[in-house]
Length: 328
Image (tube, rainbow, N blue to C red; front, side, top):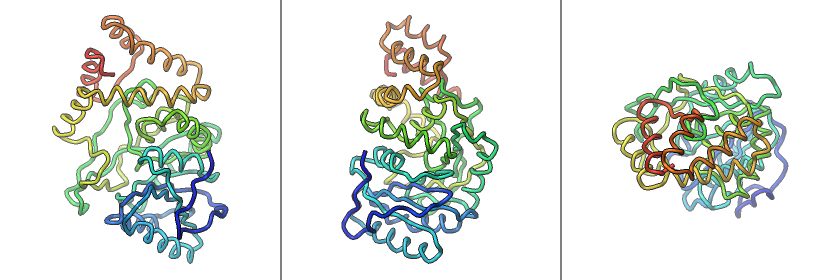
């Protein structure tokens, strides 16, 4: 796809200066909390980054704040590039950012309303450092769940089972706001994002990244030590996974058929990039799609043989409920 066009008043479309790392951030009417997140970028212990911010049609002061931050960072030799998003929601905005991202040694994803702790980038890059250069890798993990004023901090859930493609097909285990990719992961995501966009897009960009990296035989690193403050407020697209309320929301997603629709979208996006998966995982994807249409007994037996799993007892119970009710 062609690069996004700049909205009026934004910087001209010139090539990004070479940078070791890239931060991509989706923005939409986030001015209330945007400045705090931008400042947390500036406060990182790693400064070798440029920022590409996809504004998806904001009508608030967000674009002005991005321009001001671009001027501020320009004085320090760091580039901030506001670009226009497709105007079709957060998932397609992030996929567009990934598809057009500059080549980089690493890439970090950010939401507009969180705050990164100063060591966020350094911690993620240290975790990726031991991965072979030619192996795609994804880092992500827990976060501090906070109220709107960044108080009342609680850790997001701990997951005990190892990440993998059989988990990724039925569950996302790390928010995109925590994720970093190594160079091979960036190259894979850039190549596959256009294919996913052409297929209509997955349920969410972060779930898709987990599926893509794991499916391609890459390494997925889940960090149990949080390095971001995940702000909860009325505008969150997805809230935290803590507490009874979160469990009831997940149950409602199953009963309403939301989970089944999300899986439909994920399968379409992954199928568009099936040639990038390992032969084993390509076969698992094909079987997964086929088993969803079987009768109850055959479906349950097929899923049991496939070894698909969600993290935690509640998550696994919801998976089997969805299978029994044909809501997956």
